[in-house]
Length: 346
Image (cartoon, rainbow, N blue to C red; front, side):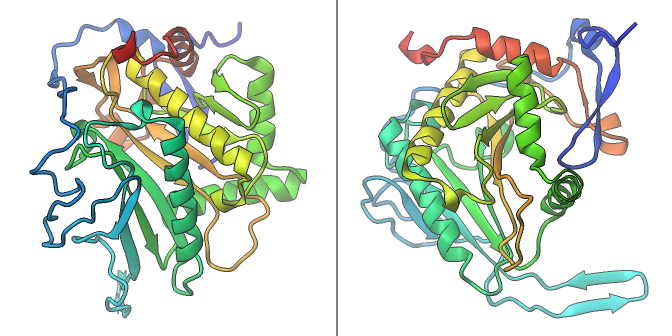
């Protein structure tokens, strides 16, 4: 008898990190008497005089924003990384530390305070994509920048301190652990098979269709087989590229389109502004060649049963390895079944 992915507890291997996730699909039937979140407000104004990211307003750091009309990028007033910080090393027996240099930027997606990515126009999302590419290209030219992380925390549930549509870009002198793991996994596969790990994985997923959510000519949005979060998603370009700067004009537009379509699907699962952390993973920018790398964008949304019940990564997840209840196949089926039209327009 083979595994029944809908009922049998089992472990799944993450080909990108070399780690495992425990899947317990039978646990979706358990009653919930735990914490219930508040549903966030969905009726924000186009402009908020108290918002430190709205056009023309003064930020918390004392700087005034210009009256920007599309995207706006600035260095974070309270940056986690500093360009000219102390870069000394510390060694004391088993205790080690290294100084870390970097640049942190904030990217406002739109001057409209009320919007989120699924509610933006494709033309405006393409400007966001172009800004990501421009910032990546400029930062990667700096000799001390070896890794660039583009990400967005959407919603208070994911720790977002301001509801204005925005994301962040952290560029730093070292390469973080997750990128190192993904580099090593892709490199080992590339050397052994003379082909890209995500290319071959994507072809297998496209053949089965079981975990595909959306597909267009240049990109695929899917629930990865090894997903840890309930509705974890991944956008993967069909063409193997090391980083986002390699996209053609038509690929940029296609990326903006699938970004909007996927986030609409997320919002429509529970008819709410779906919280998530998203990030673009791409090759390090340390000057080395990375022919094995295939960039991709991950979405980690915490909602599990409804707009008010989230998945907590605690207990077993903190001390052993990630665990999920709803299977990747069930999540993909759910996302495919919801409307492609945003719930606010239905």
